[in-house]
Image (tube, rainbow, N blue to C red; front, side, top):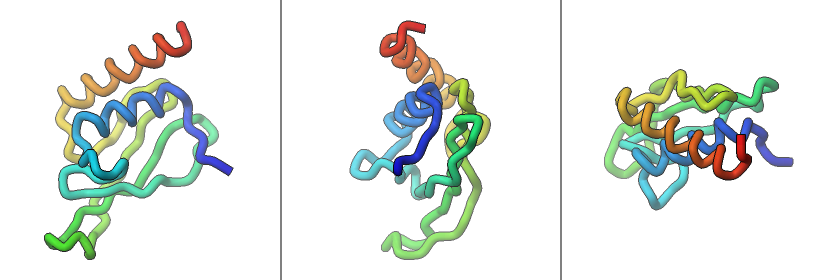
Length: 102
């Protein structure tokens, strides 16, 4: 069984990771990584964020959380600047409209 989120939230997450992500891994960014949270009935994407505590990337501490609403709005995303969040939302929703015509 897969993990379900709304299409809008998924498109926005993918664009956010293109902007700030480490391109070698899909969940690593700016010295941190995320683990997906539980599936939400409203279609929102949630995740716990952990920050690496050393250069070996073997130890990490919890340092926040990510939440992207079902409509594609980024509510929380540690290390992302306001302009980066806006860019990710705009690009993600544009790709959603291209794919689904809404």
